Amino acid sequence: MLEIVIWLSFAILSLSLLLSFVRLLRGPSLPDRVVALELMASLTVGFIGVHAIASQRFAFLDVAMVLALTAFLAAVGFARFLEKRGIHADD
Amino acid sequence: MTEWIAAPLLLAGSLLMLLAALGALRMPDLLMRMHATTKAGALGSGLIMLAAAVFFGSAEVWARVLAIIAFIMLTAPVAAHMIGRAGYFVGVPLWGRILRDDLKGRYHTDNHSLESPPEFSERRQHEERRGQ
Image (cartoon, rainbow over all chains, first blue to last red; front, side, top):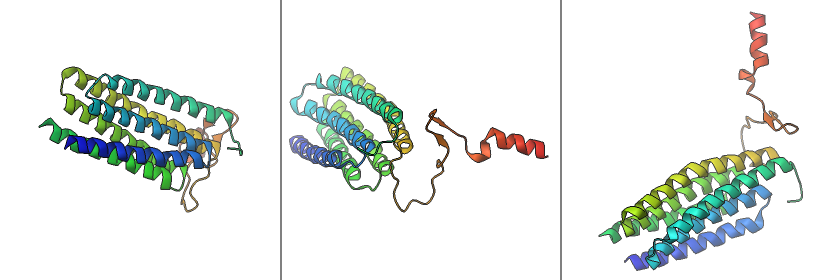
């Protein structure tokens, strides 16, 4: 049963990744794209968790931890960049 | 036995992730998209991590998973707050049918500071004190 659920989760997460990628492409503004990237990072953390279960190696959880940390730093950096850059119409 | 606990957690986590992605795609403006992605995304990845902890069951995995969940729960609101603040101040258009915007006109782009609401501003309190 767990195997079926694992493949189902992989499928659902892939679909979610695709949907957020559509948002990343469509924009329409730069903050929208940053939100889509943030969601993709959190989706990838989920992916790594499912993969850790599927491959039965818990060392992958360390990767998930590092990725979550990096995503947070990226979000803070993007937010500072957006605020300092000010108002642009050419996103 | 642990399979029967881990599987529903895994499924719930990935369905919440799907909900977050759907919200990111379908919601009409930036703040509503963040409202969907931040909460559902953080809870979804937290549930998947919990499923991994239940599946492996050893103490070291539990410690790692609890650290990851605590980290996600601490950082997701902070990151969302910063992006939402930057997005609002950069002038991302809000939804057309929004009813009120309490921050309107209180942010100064030259020094990046935010004024207090009118009922809490120092100048007004001072004037009221003088008027009494």
